[in-house]
Image (cartoon, rainbow, N blue to C red; front, top):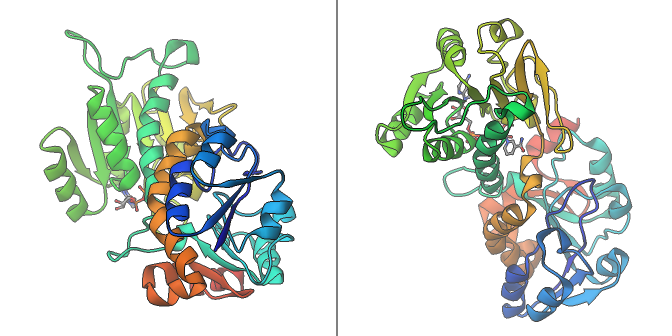
Length: 359
Ligand SMILES: NC(=O)c1ccc[n+]([C@@H]2O[C@H](COP(=O)([O-])OP(=O)(O)OC[C@H]3O[C@@H](n4cnc5c(N)ncnc54)[C@H](O)[C@@H]3O)[C@@H](O)[C@H]2O)c1
């Protein structure tokens, strides 16, 4: 199959659909890979690196779209990309179609078959192509909290790990899923005192086992959240209720009980945020202050580290992408996990949850 990789064009998107390492795997499977010039610039992979991996470099996105039978991207296609898709093509990328009827119409009109990373499932019912970005965001959340706590950024001036004789920072993680676990791992690694709050007792048992006494675990109630955030230097919001907006676990009134210049990092902001006072920010201007508490609410945290994020994403997408390249869209018929990823088949919305939200 001819597999095309255009350069991402969404504002501030530096990741790339295929890394040179992934290209080499596609080529080894007998596929031809066409890469737009400079597609890997955001991850310091130049055209020569792609050529060395066996790709052919094309001078424009138009040529990639025109020649390829499958397009591999990162972000949802933009309007000038929809119009280049065709009914004999497969699109493999993040789509997030449910809240985006315009894009859905664009894809339907093109007749393309589109597999969305975010709805591909694994045998355990997990979301294997979302997990790597949650891992990145979870780990990054502690770096973001550490930076926001610096005095020159308006923070409390607390070092996460403390030093001998001085207490470390207290970090509270709300939600002990993928983001929360990776946040806790980083915070513990830096020497902070960490508490994870979750509403799932089985999950708290797993975390207790996993961290071998190095985190405190607490069951999520309003009382517990109020107590924990009152003692915290940094709070990481990492809750998720699948298919719903994030619950507002921290109200504005609760900010009054927090330490001055402590930090809230709302990773769940892409689902509306779990602090009442959160609103989405960008990497260019990531924080703002409400009632003396610093808020960091960047909606696309992995975008800050495109090199790590592209490699993490490619590790997860590679087997699915290769199956699509090897067998075409029929690969979905053989693999229920990939079938859950199929959102549009020959211009028709076929994912029930997506179809419902567009009605
Ligand atoms: N901002 C970003 O760049 C970015 C990147 C990746 C993920 N995210 C977001 O981070 C959030 C977490 O993702 P995840 O992959 O860790 O999800 P996950 O499903 O693995 O974990 C969510 C956890 O929240 C817990 N939870 C639900 N309601 C709760 C409550 N009331 N109190 C305490 N815990 C509660 C669940 O039991 C679960 O353990 C999602 O909203 C996701 O979209 C954001």
